[in-house]
Amino acid sequence: MKQTARIISTYTADVSGVCSALFELGGMSVIHDASGCNSTYNTHDEPRWYDYDSMVFLSGISEMEAIMGDDEKLIQDIISATEQLSPKFVAIAGTPIPMMIGTDFKAIASVIEKQTGIPAFGLATNGMHTYIQGVSMALEALAKKFVINPVEKTKNLSVNLLGVTPLDFSINNSVSHMREILENNQIQVISCWSMGDSLEQLQFAPSASINLVVSYAGLSVAKYLKSKFHMPYLIARPYGKKFTSEIIQEIKNFANTNQVKNPVLFQENRLHDSKIIVIGEGVSSCSLAKALELETGKAVKSVIATEFEQTMLAHDDSIARDESELIPVLKQAEIIIADPLYQPICPESAKFISLGHEGFSGRIYHDLMPDMTDNIDWILSQL
Image 1 (cartoon, rainbow, N blue to C red):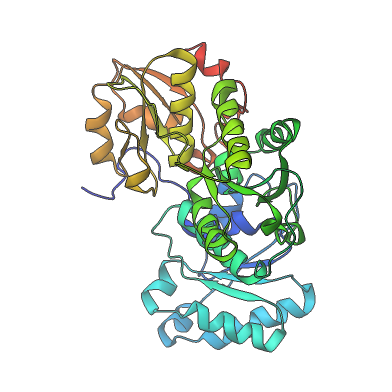
Image 2 (image 1 turned 45 degrees about the vertical axis):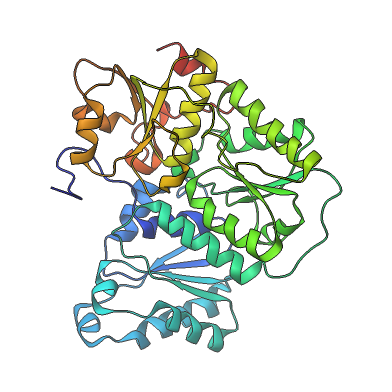
């Protein structure tokens, strides 16, 4: 049965992706729901919840409000909260109930912005898609609201990191390490969308030379920045010494030629007929597969279980979103690298290497989420 998880877990929902993308930026995120989505987000999906302050609220829609379509109460509750908290922006995200009653989030956000003078945007998430779509929608809306004017380009080679949330990068120093490696190679990091930087810092994004899309959730904002400011982008997540060096070299090649031949850096020169499979988010799993090939000389295949563009796949890679699609793909595998919650559907004959993923199993396997930005020996030792 399609879109049914009998055995394995499901990925973090789109509404949690919105909250994760906006968590550190000083805005107010409102989940429009009766109850439940907020607790799922803060206890399962958000590793920063107990260490950082953030304005994430639930509307508490009642049965009668859902039946009658009473948006006025939601609007007035948000306006009242803004008067007390003075957020930098307001983001309203949806869940299944608002989807069923046809809530117009853009109209609600427009009313709130007019009455408060605070930038607001509505995102019609519905809990039926993964966090990839929520993060993508949030970052693009943020850029369209706040990154609208050109700024002077930096004199030095510089990048923005797009698509960075703990759902893919966890809290294991991988983000700060990625920035450190780039800057040690004379590549300035202007902004990180959106961990470790303020909203004000993100507004300097157009000053960068090029964008580096490190998760599929960052691609939509990369496309906006390209259309608005003619900024090119590369797509890859740094993994291991060889692939990270290749990414750095591609950024430098752009500085010399002012051209990007193929932005999908993990797509070319891949090996065939792999018996090693990596399961996960698109950019991460494809980048890890490419990094492992460079380090071992063995073919590695990526099986992508979240939203992804078919045109970005290498010849052996595939997209399998459901159990019914995944199980046949895994039958011929000799080694499988994935979150531990995938193991029950993997063949017993295959060696399983556990690599935790915050967007799939939450904080359960945090110890299995190492920083592999320039060192993948942790996995190489198990192959």
